[in-house]
Length: 107
Image 1 (cartoon, rainbow, N blue to C red):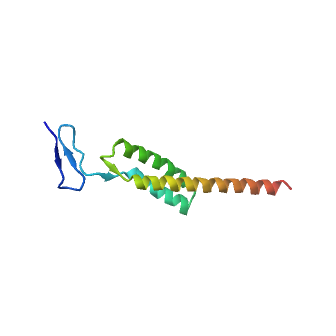
Image 2: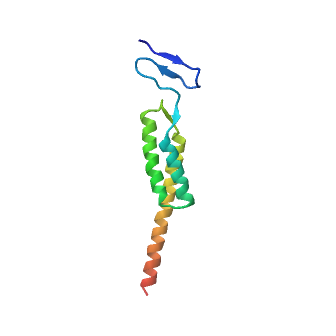
Image 3: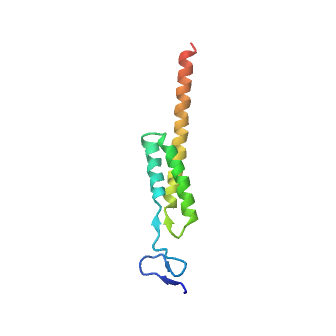
């Protein structure tokens, strides 16, 4: 059996044939999670940004493994960057707390 290409459902081709059906590309749910956690890491709690960074790494691997199925690499990259920023912010908070503790008890 040969493969046929159908362009009617979306702008992306849908491969139908003996090797399987791909259907239209969908946004990777892990990339949405990474973006949400990255935003929360910046806005509310810097420790949540670590989860955004890890989820973005996983999402980028999923998208790279099957690019015909998944979209959302931009969201995953944004979540990755926001996760890095919130981890740096978190490290600065921890260093400030250590410094404050050290200054308080060094007298």
